[in-house]
Amino acid sequence: MAKPTLWCLTALALMGGGGAAQAEDVRWDAQGAASLVFTVATKSEHEACSRLASGERVVWAFVAQGPVDFTIRDARTRQVVGGATRSAVREARDALEVPRAQVVCWAWVNRGAADTQVSLQLRKR
Image (cartoon, rainbow, N blue to C red):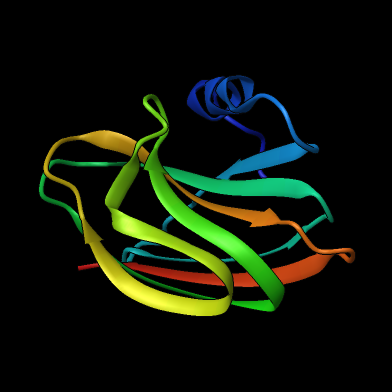
């Protein structure tokens, strides 16, 4: 897993409560794409965070082996970004456009009794 940056560590500190949480930085390739595969432990949370420029648009999609709660949120305020929140889903896709420069986190919570693997695809447009 990538070494978390200061803003990811700050986001983790703000989470509080619940099970263990993990965060990682999204690493974009030269074409503006990123792909991550990770496991969300039972009763835990996992975040993939990235700094986005004002007006930047990201098309995203994920598939999970088991049901997860999902949200996209501002790393600093923890507020939902772009109305993206879903409960007990195995997959979702959409696009996100941020109105201002900010760090956003795609976040999954596994409330199930077994670990679940998640595959995330991102592409800047």
